[in-house]
Every structure is written in C-alpha cells, then in structure tokens.
Length: 189
Image (cartoon, rainbow, N blue to C red; front, side, top):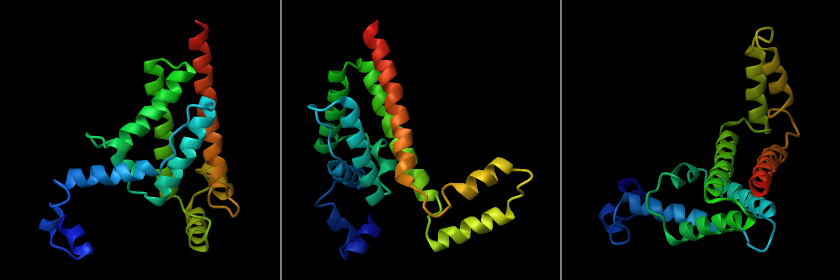
C-alpha cells in the first residue's frame, strides 16, 4: 500500500478511506479486469460463446498481464466477477452440460487461457531483440543432443511470421472439440 500511495502521490493511510486493505484493493482490481471480458451470450451456440469469451479474456489479460494470477486466488468476488461466472455457467448448463461437466469445462478453458497468456509473456517475440535472443539460444544448443528441440525452436515461435493467434485458435478448437464430444456422450446416455 505504501508503494501504491507513493505512485499516486498520496499517503498510504489515505488509501484506506477507499479500500479496507490490500485484499480489498486486489479484489477490486480483478473485478475491473473481469468486467472488460465479454460475457458469453445465451442466444448463440455454446462453442461460439466460449470462443468469444476466450478471445476477449486473452485480450484483457494481454492488457493486464498481472491479472490472471490473481483471479483464482481471490476469495471474495465482486459483482462483476460473479456476473461473469454466472454467464459462463449459464451458457454451459443451457447447452446440456451437467453441473460437474460445466465446472470442468469452465476450468479447462480458463486454464488454457491463463496458461497460454503466461507462456506468451515468457516467449521471445518476433521483434529484432527476440530474434537475436533466439539465435543466441540456437547457436548454443547442442543440436545433436536435442535435435527435435532445435528443429522446433528454429521453425516455430522465434521465426519471422510466427502467428501466436493461430496457435491460440488451434488449442482452443481442440478443447472445444473435445468438450463437444464429452457433451454429446453425456447427452446420449
């Protein structure tokens, strides 16, 4: 709170006129980020609703890279967070997912979004600095000991033209396809 107060140019104690404590502040910050995520609509196919939500969440976490690690750690949820959870679960339940499968689907999709975002933050980018770092790594890599790693590193994320959005779509489509199969199986029994 002292650091935040300093950055805002106020005394840390004055912040307590607006929030009860650090947890209250983090809850509010997380709630604001979640409010930026497009809530899934009930009037579209569940897969499309989850796809739109995933892309919107990815964009929000790209704008606020600190937020993903706090979302699931917050005990109390603000109204924005609760409305968001309710809309996601509503789409899944209306599509025919059981309560248990809805929870699993929600967790799976969110784990993918958060994990992909974290990996993106840690990846070298396709800019010149990132390319130089990747080149240095490849030159130091004993390719005879790690031929598959060297092959992938030289042709994938460090290469010019790498399409991170296409990688995200590939994984998301696999998840949605798998969930559709689980849903179809559950509905046929």
